[in-house]
Structures are given as C-alpha cells and as structure tokens.
Length: 519
Ligand code: FAD
Ligand code: SIN
Image 1 (cartoon, rainbow, N blue to C red):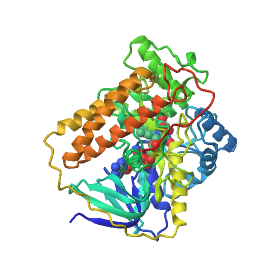
Image 2: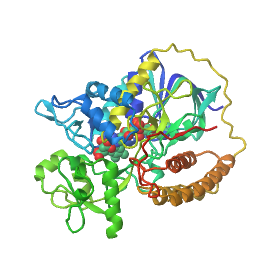
Image 3: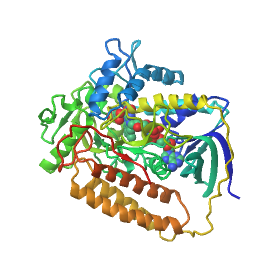
Image 4: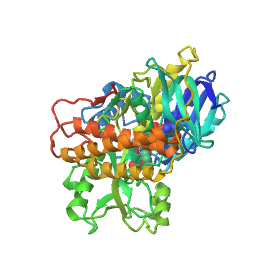
C-alpha cells in the first residue's frame, strides 16, 4: 500500500524560500519539507553576489525602490517593491540570527554593488553568500522537532479539489513509489525554470516544476517571457554552469574583446554596471558581430591579494581550469539565469487557489517586473517567506481529511524507451536557446511554439503508458514551462526589459502584464 502522510504544512523546495518559510512557521505546526535532490542543492546554494538592503546611512529606501522600479521597466509593482525594500534590513537581521556572518569592513558591512544599483547596498559573504545562507538556515531547521525533511522526493502534481489544494503526489526517488502528502496548507518553493535553456547558470533542479504544477492546478501565471540572461557565465568546456558574479564588475571589472578593447561605453553610460538586459544584449551583439565564442572580463589590474580575498570561489574555480584571474581576463558568455515571471501571488504568498502559496523564484510577486535587479532575489525569498509564514500562522488549522485516490500505477509499464526522454529534454533546451533567447523574432517564436506543442503531445503519450520516473516528471514540467515562456513571448508585441523582439523593437506606451491561466 503506498504511503500517505499527513502534515499541517507541506513545503515543496528547500532553497532559501522553502527553508526560511519553514523556520518562520509556528512551532505548533507539523511541517514536511521536500527536496527533489540533496537538501542543499538548488540555486540558493550557488548565489554569489549577495543580498540587497539599505544598510548604509547615506542610502535610503526611496532610492532602493526607485532603482528596482527603473530596472523593472514599467512592470514593477510599487507596493510589493516597497514592502520588500522596507523589510530588507529585518531580513538581513534574521539571516544573521541564523548564523550568517556577512563580510564586514571593521564594524560595518562591506557592501558591494551590481547593475542597476545607484548605491552600494549588497551585503555578502565573500563570493559564497548563498552557501553560507543555506548551511545556516538548514542548521536552524534541524533544531526544530516539528519539521521533517524528505530528501530525494520529487513532487509530481498538487492534490486539488474544488479549487482548493490539499497537498501533493510525490515520488520517493529511493523506493520509486508515489506517496500522498495531505496537508492543510501547501507552499511551492521550487525555484525557477532556467534549465529550459541549453546554457544556464542554474543547477539541474531549476526545471520549472512548481510553475508547471501550479499551471495544471489552474493558478494564474504571470510574465513568463522575462527570462533573465546573466551576462557573465564562465566559458570553458569543463565548467558546467559556473557564474562569474556581477559584483566583480561592481568592483571595477571590465568587459573586453579578445584584442583588449572595452565596449560597454558604446551601449550605455553606466557601462559594465548597466542593468543585465543591456549588458547581456551588448555581449550577444559583440559575439555575433565579431564571430566570437566569448568575450572577456578583466579584474587582473586589482591587487592580487585583494582579488583572492574578495572572490575566493571564483579564483579557485578558474585556477582549477588553468585561468589565473589575478593575471588573465576571464572568458565569459551570457546564460539563462533567472525566471522573473511565475505563479501570481499577493504579498502573503497566496495564489488564486485556496490553501496554496508560492514563494521565491517560482512566484511572481511583482517586484521584478520586466527585469530583476541584481541581489533582489534572495531578498524576495526571505521577505516573502516570512510574510507567507505569518499569514499561515494566523489561520486556524482545520485539516479536513479529504479522500484522494491513491496514485494508480496499474496501467503503466516500465519504459524501454528512456532515450526518448533524454532526446526530448535536449531538444527542448536547444529550441529555447536558439529560438527564444536574448534576441527574439516572430518567426523563431512561432517555430519554437509549433515544435514544443508536438513535443508536449509526445511527452503526454509517454506519460500515459510508462512508469513514472524523476526524469519524466522533469521533462513534463520543462516542456510546460518552455511553452509558457513562448506563449507569453508571442503575446507581448513590444520589446521591454528582458524581452527583445526584433519585429517589435519599440517599448509600448502602456505597460501590461502577460497573464495565462489554464481553462
Ligand atoms: P532554489 O534555491 O532554486 O530551490 C529550489 C528547491 O526546490 C530545491 O530544494 C529543489 O530541490 C526543490 N524542487 C524543485 N522542484 C521540485 C519538485 N518537483 N519536488 C520537490 N522539490 C523540488 N540572487 C541574489 O539575490 N543574489 C545573488 O548573489 C544571486 N546569485 C546567484 C548565483 C547563481 C549561480 C544562481 C543560479 C542564482 C543566483 N541568484 C542570486 C538567484 C537566487 O539565487 C535564486 O533566485 C534564489 O536562490 C531562488 O531560491 P528558491 O528558494 O526560490 O529556489
Ligand atoms: C551575481 O552574483 O552576479 C548574481 C546576482 C544575482 O543574480 O542577483
């Protein structure tokens, strides 16, 4: 008999959004925390640059709000941004209470800067901020007896009845059995969908599972066309998904061509510190114009010890690949980095489906609009995890044990065609990279949509007849997330922020969100 679990709250995802939500929930609640991989695996762990907050007496909330709004290109929600910015210093304090030790300059935070910020306001732990946050949050979680961790459990679909969520079907990857998790409240904290692209800064977990599950559960999905491409990922055949933090440009790093010539001044007067959409498009243009494989990022003019102290992770990684960043420029290319759109929520993380919340990169709270400002994502995770948990803490928990059918595996067989899954997986990522990338066109988007529709039909057929597996779950979600991105991109007949369509190069006068809901 497949297992049934009963918890007050089910949290799917153990990144900074999931762990912080669990920590902020009342100790009286029983909580299941689910990770489809190792608990620490996810984008949060790899965050380098830091987390933004007004922490300097010469900075102020108004400027942080203004910078965020201006980067968001008319689609930022001012109320949500104000809420996030005003809660940022408290978010930093709560991370410190969990044990995170931000880099200090004597008694003050060492604040760095990144694209779009008009003031130094990025608190960081050298260049491994995410690792420190994750390790410390997990340590705190492990002290709580009301929280149960489930590692290597991948959610398949939400349990929905009468437009209300009661948990999820989850595959135990250790036993390959599907278990039902019945809960009064469910929080999706599954991160983004950047794995839909061939080249990405993200770990393998970012397959858009939460967005796809929420879409199937009839949640409102907003602004999926805004995939953020990070301008500087390491270009090296043996460096899978390694980011070169924007903070390196914040500290003076210059983007150069192979002949040593700088080029960012030709694109924006903020040069290397223009928002990411501008820098990524500029690099893309240089690569295409000059027929290059990559451009270079140079910090070697700084003092050697200073570089090693501020960027120890990048120094070591590059050194392991034969690049000495204290003497050589670093080969870099843009790669898919962040999903600005996602499951629509209010300030408490509530979706339009009862008892279902979404927090972190999976959510669309409105704080990023058409382009996310650097280091506002970890901040969003922490601030909205707290407000979501507070909202749940205020409810009286009355779990009505609805009857749900057990997962039925009686009509499916083991697959002898696993190559189909890996082939389709690869094809989706190539389609997205080649046709739905930094610069888009109507023709390329239509082609992508046509082929993705076919792939989705093939995946659905496969799903109906073969035993469920982790790869198949992710493939089904990846194609769904890719389709949502393409559908949203097609419906936006303008260029704005991260979405650039050469058939509509102008920004429209009116800024409108792209909203999709399954009928
Ligand atoms: P994640 O940290 O990605 O966690 C997702 C969790 O969901 C994982 O535990 C995963 O196992 C789980 N999961 C997913 N699907 C399922 C499923 N079906 N079933 C069960 N579990 C599932 N932002 C900043 O603000 N500052 C930075 O300096 C910064 N640097 C970055 C550097 C890199 C290399 C990357 C990739 C991102 C960076 N970002 C940064 C962005 C930021 O790290 C992420 O947006 C943020 O950490 C997302 O957190 P999250 O908790 O929403 O998701
Ligand atoms: C970086 O360190 O460049 C990533 C920061 C971010 O994505 O916010």
